Image (cartoon, rainbow, N blue to C red; front, top):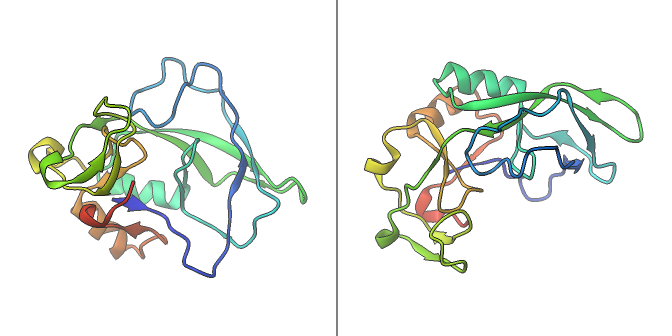
Length: 184
């Protein structure tokens, strides 16, 4: 599972404002947008945060730094629809153009529920399940390099080959959490 966690005691900048973009219900469903957003997408850095910037932000409008995006693409990840952003610091007015908003195309129902610990409060078996431990069905994952977990769309599943490739390129400050240790 791919995450970009901040080490304890460290601080990082984080985006402040997530706009509602016309025609986009969610960035997390794994579906292409009927109409792409106007570019560049305008965002703000939260002036109450400080420190370096993460390479990956997975919140409401997921963001990926240009260097990480290039590494993912060079490793064979080809299911990201990316959109340029202007992220302005509201105090300094400095504009950051090194991040792309990204939509992962593909939500795969790949949880092996018999081997997982989970709750399904909505009863749908999709989108918002809560996992305390996850088992991935290799057959359902089909060797895909990166996808959203359909049962819990906040989860980004990466193939071990992608993990090793990113680690060989310095890791980008990413955290790779074994599915059985993932809470999502």
